[in-house]
Amino acid sequence: MASVFQHPKTPKQASRKRARFDRLLEPEMLKALAEPTRAQILSCLLKCGRPCSVTEVAECCSIDFSMVARHLSTLARAGLLSSEKKGRTVWYQADAPALATYFRDLADAIDELSPQDGCPTDDDCDCCPSDASTKGSTP
Amino acid sequence: MASVFQHPKTPKQASRKRARFDRLLEPEMLKALAEPTRAQILSCLLKCGRPCSVTEVAECCSIDFSMVARHLSTLARAGLLSSEKKGRTVWYQADAPALATYFRDLADAIDELSPQDGCPTDDDCDCCPSDASTKGSTP
DNA sequence: GGAATACTGACGCCATAACGCAAGTATACG
DNA sequence: CGTATACTTGCGTTATGGCGTCAGTATTCC
Image (cartoon, rainbow over all chains, first blue to last red; front, side):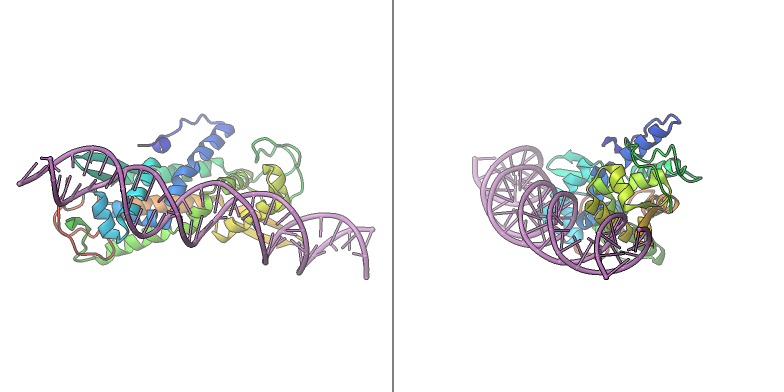
């Protein structure tokens, strides 16, 4: 499975937190999830829980076989599914706990990252990666 | 094949959980998140915490003004940002707690939804919305 | 009123990717 | 062997969406 599920070690530094957040927001996984057909397929596999073949998923979702094969491959490449070839059939399986963990990590990263007491208005706002030209007005 | 994909009977609770999950996986929000530029902009606003104008974000992220305006509008439409117009400037703000809550809900929905003890192999699997045509094998 | 600021919307260009078909590959079975 | 099954991959079409430009709108300030 892909690295997306690994927990980054986060020393308690703002820059680390930002890095963690940015990494979790890495678009590969989200892009894979954001496509309706893929979401449907993933949903199907999550609901099922056991490994499924391409044919099964295609029949289940009533989607063209070759499209399902391609989408499953995309989902697996994004780390959302594991795949195992046995004989001539490939068994795809959704790792629900890993996926749930990923989203919880993302939520935690957002919590850690967000300035609870507001951003200092007129100096020392590290909102942005590398730009210190426009410090200024607040509504 | 794949009896697992049938849903002979759908208990109300299970179908509710599925509905909840599917609603959370609604692609609007994920699609908005899955675009690198938008992720950068959202990240910037999350890190800042306070409301920011389009001009500020554009300068901060070094992105073309009108693009930023468009992306901010997209993010707001997807529910990822709140916007408030005051005078001639529009203040966009990221609601970090809400976003974190969304991802936690998604994680919870996945946990609830996934069959902890595995999917019964040969009968009574309600993985799929509406298809009961095939019987078959499991790995 | 007129100019400046802050944003929005419309047009076209282009890259990416989904879709469907069909041909190709790999494995199993008789 | 040859055939059937289970995928994969390549190709052309279509659709979506990001990007840049520029014109338009709304509000403020002089």
